[in-house]
Image (cartoon, rainbow over all chains, first blue to last red; front, side, top):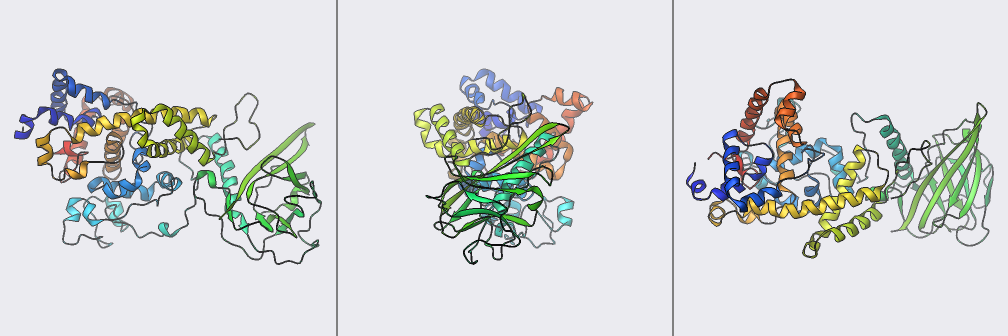
Length: 345
Length: 191
């Protein structure tokens, strides 16, 4: 036992409480901790703070408490822990999504002064050459030219921050269905595109012309807009950048819109079914509606909301698809709803 | 915080398909302000973030029927953990003036982010991800609340064998952490 440990059994014990509670001490160390706790009420009280319900993640992901304080964590994480967090972020989509959802870059910078001592104190304190395996890297990682002790060259940081749901291994079937539902919402947001309407005003005939289109309100907001199916628009602006989970459907706009192009997932109904599509405002009132046959909404088609006047103002909207068909004498209804918000930039 | 799709099968409550982030944040913050004692209200922003991260993780794992009920539970647990966290850090970094004076970097220990227990367990598991899959399995099993006897029973090995294997795992970890400074891995230093 070291001199300091002899002089300060309280400190020795307290510094090991986390490891003791996590089963990381050797048997003789655990016995010593327990013997001290039996005698010392103060240390026993502190040990109580280390009691916790089993963590559902069991250490398999970056601590939620650390992600919540990420700006400080980026500056203070050091040594082995820093290297391990960086490596974990490179392979764990869930943790990257956690960071993105809070508005943080999903990576941890390489800072020589904070890296593990055996690397940071070496003459070549910067990132090692790609073909030099790290002392802590696995053979497999070294073979791939990568190490968690240095940043991998990746384009991830240059990709726009869009929150995505990525499948996890071993999900039950219902989870897949939920993810599909989410994916459809996400894809709707990803394909929500703004473009300048260069077409002449007035009814458009030919491919993409509406089968049936009418406005339920002849005046007020949205007056003059119509819904129709159309081929891919000619000019596109990139998909809206998501800033968080609840903003998947947020479309930044500059003032009222003349045209919106939406990619929507077709309903699961027979091709010949008649689908009613409605545009609702934030109050749930139907602004416009149209009907189309299921076969008309193909993957290469988008739904256009357009009008002669720019009257689609920033605010919340919902697009509702509803249809029905009969199977074996039973009436089956299908519906889905896409919510989106036009938000002033 | 709302349901956007049709109802599920009869008798089965529909899962929430869309969670409005801003509303969830506001709700979590409100619950946390209710759960936390007054002096801890300075932590509200960080704890709200933590609560939302936990929400995301639950949503990934399982079906969520009522987000508000879930957030209420998560907020309570987050608040309790935050109060425990203070004691945990206090135990690890302010145990003795002499110890702090001898520590390599005492200033850096002030204001550590996150929870020390969660961070420690992450380091252990993540280290073994690259070095020994069996050690990782043992660590995850133990951290998820099972004792060594239960781990031994479920793996069909003897208790002694499991303990010996775990002891070898700890040797690996101690060797990797022997140059580490900071409170988290201080226990790995030889006496």
